[in-house]
Amino acid sequence: MKIERPRGTRDFLPDEMEKRRVIERIMRETAESYGYREINTPTFEHLNLFTIKSGEEIVQEIYAFKDKGGRDLALRPELTAPVMRMFVNECSVMPRPLRFYYFSNCFRYENPQKGRYREFWQFGVELIGSDSYLADLEVIVLACNIMKNLNLNFTLNIGHVGLLRKLLQDVDEARYYKIMRMIDKNDIEGLEKYLSSERLEGYFDPIKDLIGLKGGTEVINSAKEIIPDFDFSYLENLCKGLEKLEIEYNLDFSIVRGLDYYTGVVFEAFAKKGLGAQNQICGGGSYRLTHLFGGGDVPSTGFALGFDRIAEICKMKADAAKSILVAYTAGMELEALKISERLRKSGKTVLSDVMERSLKKQLSFANTVGAKYAVIVAENEFKDGKVILRDLEEGEQIIVNIGDLLKYFDKE
Ligand code: ATP
Ligand code: MG
Image 1 (spheres, helix red, strand yellow):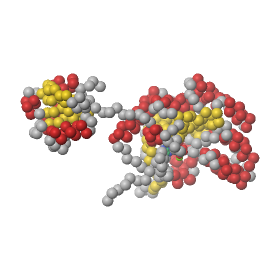
Image 2: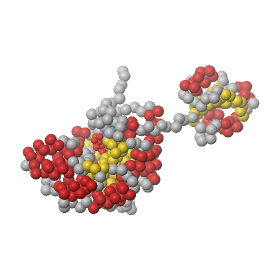
Image 3: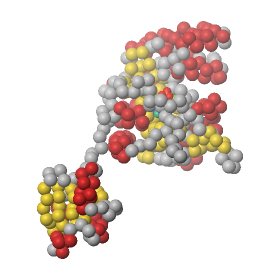
């Protein structure tokens, strides 16, 4: 019986894994250069960690299940809520701000398509404990630098959910979230219908005008006309900072983000080409979650990069590993293994024959796997403490002392 993998999951073969590791390394190194340190949380959590803020509706979108003890659990659909839970439980007395990063798989019950999977990976950071615009600035600059270091061609859009919150401050929470969801889905028609059915039609024009504002800092002036009693100084400071650090961006007040916990600046990055409809590669913003998990009210900012979408468009190439194949003539296999072990201890990648094949077949295998050298352990030479070293790319070979072997390989 042939068993297929579950819908929306993928297998990664070595070439793909090597490329993914290169991308991962660049992400880690960039985050670490800003002082972020890696954390890890459980793959599954109590279901209510994710429903507390996002509501019961989210259960439809995640892998939720009961364990044998009858507990309601869920595979994590994202990492921000788990990190905040961890912060409240383990780190609330640590000196702030805290800078954490993670690289983990997430699970969502999605309709699978290109760039949208049921198991996917996120690389993200959380900067915990600051409500200054400098925190948002750092996190946005870090996200941009990761994408730049990966040579990605992207656009960055920045908004502030505080504007819509202020505009809708007299609307009750349930209706507010409904409206925000429609804005997130860009369902303007639905929004108009909903507002009039709830006798909130007066909000339609200002919402439409506000979310239609897109461009440089000049749109702040137009927004001020729509919501005169909102304090724009935070956003203005952030914009100044972005200009100082030469980060290109657009303001876009239609960004509200799907998840409901964002309270301030929000941002999204889109790949300019290669991904079609699933081209959002990064989402983030500032939020307050800790009070929901039994902690104080701690402001935080973070982002998550869609690792799989980035891997799909990233041209990064892993350095081809230069391996050495140690081959042997009949009866010399254990001597060959001993030499292999010695080479590995010096950091070389060495393939040993485990098929008991003829020398000719071993060498032809060396060619198929692209090994750069073959070390041939043959009885005659071995008696004199020597082996044959063949450069498979040049097609030349020499006889060398076993003790001198290492000297002949490229210094790495
Ligand atoms: P989308 O609107 O595309 O569903 P989202 O708003 O649900 O994205 P976030 O929860 O902010 O996404 O996750 C951050 C990033 O993770 C996204 O920008 C995207 O690149 C990536 N991502 C989200 N869902 C998936 C998925 N099912 N498969 C692959 N990548 C995903
Ligand atoms: Mg989604």
